[in-house]
Amino acid sequence: SGTGTITANITNSSSITLTHSLVQGSGGSGGSWIGGSFVDGGGNIDSDPLFVEPVDPTGAPTTGGDLRLGAGSPAINAGDNQYVTGVPTDLDGNPRISGGTVDMGAYEFQFFYTLTVSLAGSGAGSVSSAPAGIDCGTDCDESYVDGTLVTLTASTDTGSSFSGWSGACTNTSGDCLVTMSEAKSVTATFTLNQYLLSVSLAGDGNGSVTSDPTGIDCGTDCSESYDYGTLVTLTASADTGSSFSGWSGACTNTSDCTVTMNAPREVSATFEAEELPIPPTGSFEVFLPLMQLNH
Image (cartoon, rainbow, N blue to C red; front, side):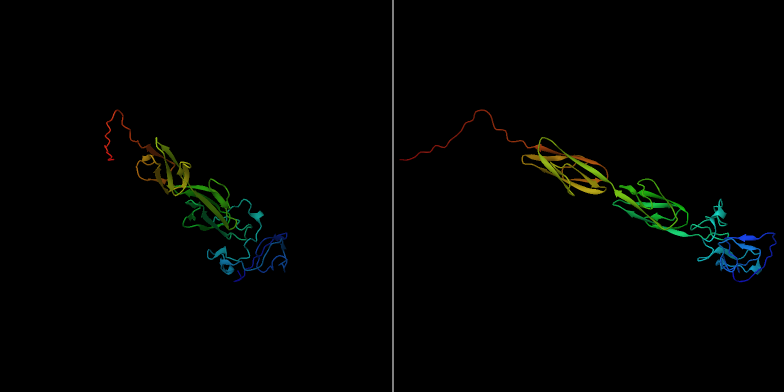
């Protein structure tokens, strides 16, 4: 730690090879190696490890201090992965390798990467995560330790459908699985459902039906798809010699028909032919005025 020194004598009949170790006073690999009974095996360093709370070697052994690596420590990613094969976690239970290469020491410095979720499309919904941290709608980004497998689940609001993921995931259904090895972003797209409104004409009369919003002009165009929740007003217009007698189906009144499109709807407009006067039959007496002309 640079706060003190302690000397240990190692008796061995052969030289000891040190590799990927932090050895104070060694000069590090390629430098003025300590020599003697020690052989430089490469990857060694000689610098302050930047422990979170260093311990004076003269006070060892001790349970004090904190030998976890602080940010910027030269021991981060300075080890050799072959030496931790089959060792999945450090003393804290965190992933033994974080950032691609194992650290020197008993504790792995944990790299955190941010996962950002965004919502897109005409519909509405939310995304949650496991492990917890993202609840988008409201909380759409979270930092996770390197190597964490994050599962994102999309939930649709009423009247919407989930169309798929983009970004770090590209599947169109199911959950999004992201392994955090770097900062990543994911977009969930929701589409507003559309439902078909169908109009038919009935009766022995003639007429037409129009809609607001536009889309139906029946006579000719008698069906239209509308977004979920759209309020559609249908107006019936009778032709000359006919009268409108009422709606059936989704409406049963005799004025305008108002339909909320939260499901497929069918409406029928009935027009009746007006009755013409029936001419009288039989014999009739006709009285004509008598006019006399004076000559």
